[in-house]
Image (tube, rainbow, N blue to C red):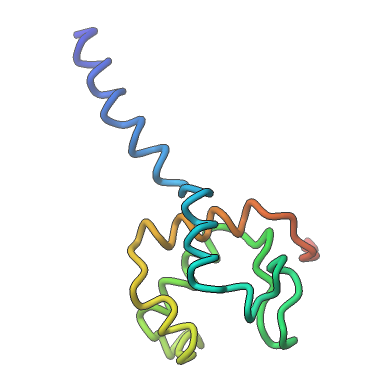
Length: 113
C-alpha cells in the first residue's frame, strides 16, 4: 500500500508543478513574441492607452484572454487580428507559461474591492 501511495505522489507532483506555468519559459516566449513592443518594456506602459497593462495581472485572467485570442472569440471581444496572430501558435502550456511570467512581474494595476 505504501508503494502505491508513493507512486501516485510521484505521478501527480510533476503535473502540479507544470499546472501553474513555467516563469522562465514564459519570459522567453514573451520576448520571442516581442510582447513589449505594444505592452511596454516593463509590461506596465503600453504604447496605446487602450492596450492593457499585463504585469501583475491575474494569471487565470491572462491565460483566459490568450486562449480567447487564439480562438478569435468575438463574443468576448477577443477578435483582435494582431493578438489573434500572436496567440495562434501558442500551445496550452505556452499560454500557462506566459501567464505565469506576466503575473510574476511587479504591476501598477490598482485593485479595489
